[in-house]
Image (cartoon, rainbow over all chains, first blue to last red):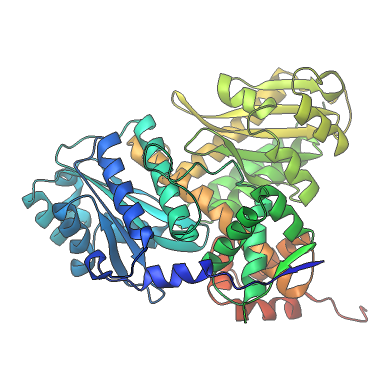
Length: 248
Length: 251
């Protein structure tokens, strides 16, 4: 059995990221997580029919914090949900599935009266909120805004979900790990989404005595450092050939 | 193929109708449906796969969720009867695994290793879309479905689809995406909980699932809800084994 317990800092990034309140407050040099997420928001606006995008994280106490936005208007729309305590973003995190509102004028006033009014006044007619989650680990939400009402197509939804998945990886991996490839998004995760990987996440969570997100970050960091596939690492964990210990 | 008992079939539909009310547990429902289908048609195992946003089939529920069988279900990401049924929107019926080596090389290898001899797959259809597939495995070649059997199992598959959508007519495409993403995420929560329980009690993930399910049943709560609760407060996991432990000297 292999015990893996060097002093990795990556698991710390998640708690650090979730305690940040505003991108502008960051003065830490080299904190590229927020930069990458901001770029992801810009990418969303460039590659999807969205006029704005915002990304927030959920802290341990359940409070939202804005982390990145494509532009100042998106930033305001994103924050509005926390200020008012309602909106597609809030529901997406609470219900743990995307909340897609192609026509805010038609259904917004019923579901989110205060938020819909404010957002419509700002000229936005569609909002699409995607929770950043892996099972029970809830990291935040990615919101897309659009001045024009209308649904996203299947392909556009696929792209949006893909961006949300990328955001999850950025949050988990922190600023150190992966290089950003050509289109500004983190390199694509191979299809490692097996039941064994999720089981391994639960196991390592107990081993570390921490959160699921920390367990996920730790598993990923190990796979990267050892140049092993996630599915292989997951299998080893489930077979109890590999375990992780809390750093001293 | 044994004639499906009309009485048993109607019992299933009554049970389904009873559970298709607001606030039912989706994963429990899908599990129940796979168990009933397996029982009804005399299958070795029945599993249900859902397509994620990228169109890859992901495991959702099965009549037998032992780890070695999960692998066979999961082997159909891009090859296999479920993959074919999903892509073509047509059932795949009476496939003899001993002859299927060229058709689905990797899947056949795993399915035979798991002891299966025959396989069927039924598409989960919503209007013009297919959102997943139901897998039926037999341990004997010659357990053939006739046309009536195919209709019945397709009907049960359609029921699974309806349960997933939680309403009989999809008002707009957004609901479908929201529900599917939510369902896929719920499955992940179950697997994470299995791992946590397995680690905390030093048992296999299969045994962990038994503990999880038993606890949900005893406390009359949804499986997903219990899984979430345990992951949010791992200290609760310790109480599971005490409930599940059999009496040392059964009378």
